[in-house]
Image 1 (cartoon, one colour):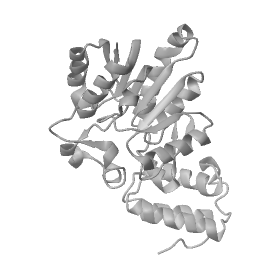
Image 2 (cartoon, helix red, strand yellow; image 1 turned 180 degrees about the horizontal axis):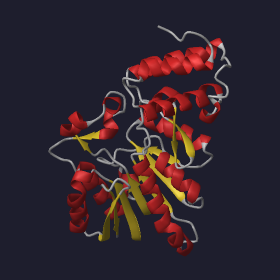
Image 3 (cartoon, helix red, strand yellow; image 1 turned 90 degrees about the vertical axis):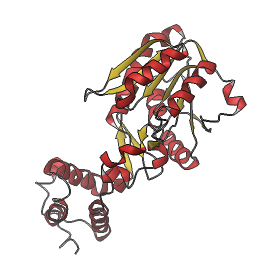
Image 4 (spheres, helix red, strand yellow; image 1 turned 60 degrees about the horizontal axis):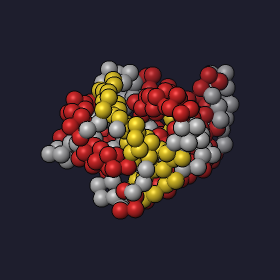
Length: 293
C-alpha cells in the first residue's frame, strides 16, 4: 500500500493510518513534522494551512520509504540521517549512537565547570574525548570552548568517519585518532590533558530485555554493551589512563549506568581521585560522574 496522492493531507493521513499502532499520538505528530521539514522544508506549524498543496514524485518517494522504515521501528534519526544535539545538527547512521539529552547534560556540566578554569589557562586547555561515536561531545565542547585543543578517539573507523564529517559540517577542528582505550598505544599514553570525558559502553548484556526494539535492533552494539561480569570495564581502564595522562588539577568526566553510580564513584576514590561528584540527570537518575586528580 502506498500514499494515495501527492497531496500533503493524504501523506499525513497515511502516516497516521500506518503508524498509529506503533507510536503514541505525540511522538507520531513529531515524526510527521520532522519528515516534512527534512524532505520538503515545511515546518510542522505550516502543515494545516498547506494541507491541500502537493509534493513532487521524488519527494513522495521519500515519505513512502520513511513509513516503511518506521514500521520496522527504525529510529527516526536514522531514517532522516541526522539528529539534533546541543543546538547543532549531526549526521548519524548505524555506525554511531543517536545523541541523547542526558549527554547534552554532561556537556553542559563540563562547560559550566570550565568557564572560570579556562581563564586560568588563558583558554588553552587540552581536552580528550574517549569513544567519540558521532563526535557530538568533542564538537559541542569545541564550539563552546573554542580556544581549547580537542582530541577524540574511537576504536571504530566507521564511527570516526562519521565524526569527521560532523566536525567539518559544524566548522570545528578536532584531532581524531583510532585508538582502543583497553589497549592504548605507548605514544598515546604519553599525552597530557586537562580534561578527559567519556560516554563509554555501559549497558550490561542482561539489560537487553529492558531495551526498546528501535535501540536494540538498530544502534551499534559495540558502543552500547559490556559483559555482565565486568560492568565497569571501560571506567576502570579509562580511569587508569586518566591517572597517567591528566595534568595536575585535571578532571575526568563520565556518563554512567545509573545502576552502578555508587560503585563507579567508589572506584574513582579507591584509585586516588579527589572531589568525586555523582550527579543526577533531569530524570533523577545517577548519570554523570566527575573526579579530579
